[in-house]
Amino acid sequence: MAHHVLIVDDNEVNLALFSALVKKLGDCDTSAFSSASEALMWAKSHDFDLLIVDYMMPELDGIEFIRQFRAIAGKEGIPALMVTASDQRPVRYRALDVGANDFLTKPVDKIEFLARTQNMLNLSDVQRKLADRAAWLADEVRKATAEILQRERETVWRLSRAAEYRDPETGAHILRMAHYAQLIGFVMKLPAADLDLLLEAAPMHDIGKVGIADTILLKPGRLDAAEFEIMKQHAVYGHDLLKGSASRVLQAGADIALAHHEKYDGSGYPNGLAGEAIPLFSRIVAVADVFDALTSERPYKKAWPLEQAAQHLRDHSGTHFDPQCVAAFLSAWAEVLDIRQRFTDQADGLCMLLKQ
Image 1 (tube, rainbow, N blue to C red):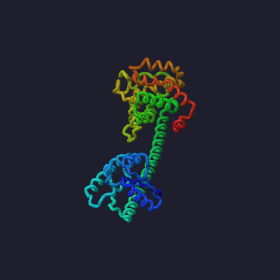
Image 2: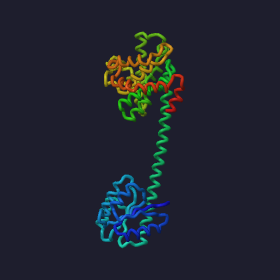
Image 3: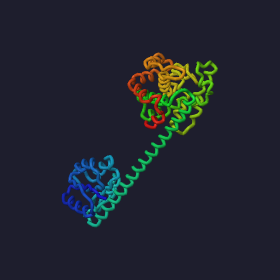
Image 4: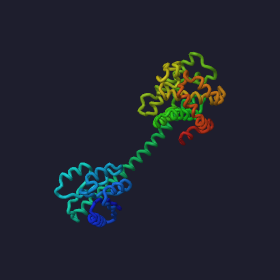
């Protein structure tokens, strides 16, 4: 393995001697500086395997050089050899404190120089291999995590579709409303992790419908008061299905399922929450879900024109919907139209999901 050694000494004779000795180790190259400040500037933008630095220098002594060198990002682990006189033990102690790894004693013995330099280069090789191994492990963990997240995502989608199969809606509805929700969160400047979580959890908003009888869920006409009370329970059922999981996605899904039918003025269900007492994700999903439901054709209704649905959001901002969520949604109208075009009812929802 080729090595590169940085040598810093204000004495030109020493620079020439040390460079010649390093090259005797085989497959080694050097960069030599008589100016400590120039060496530090060079070190900031170059990779190398070993630093050899003299203690007695006019600009920066070896201790200060090593201290500043260790402060350079990425240079914390490069071995450092400092050249000192044999009677300078206090200097050596201070050098160890700032990050020196070993010492060469003046006058420098050729055999000792070669042995200590080779040892430090071997240490550098080990550190490089460990770093490469750590990077490989990190990449493997990243890939494994991505596979787990993708499987979790598909599982969540299939669970959500289980509810939709019992309701006259489509897989594209799940994807549209989830992306609408993420769009609202983006405009509201939520953190990236929250945006990802919102996209993953929003499809579970109606999973509690699996617990509603077909006679109510599939009734073509308007529900009577007693039937509507039963229908309201799907929010609680969804929460009960998802709560208590170790998964952040399922935890968020439980909160969304429970509260996405709450209304900003407190007239919603199941708990009559109002304003910011309603979880933010649920307030966001309420806007996304209602808009897509209004603009989607179902066996029991025609799709509303987009502007009529947008006006419905405006008219009910502050009563049904969080005004901030409505404003965020309507301010990104071009993106709303793009989502509608990307996720059509005729497309295969699972295929679209796996391409995300």
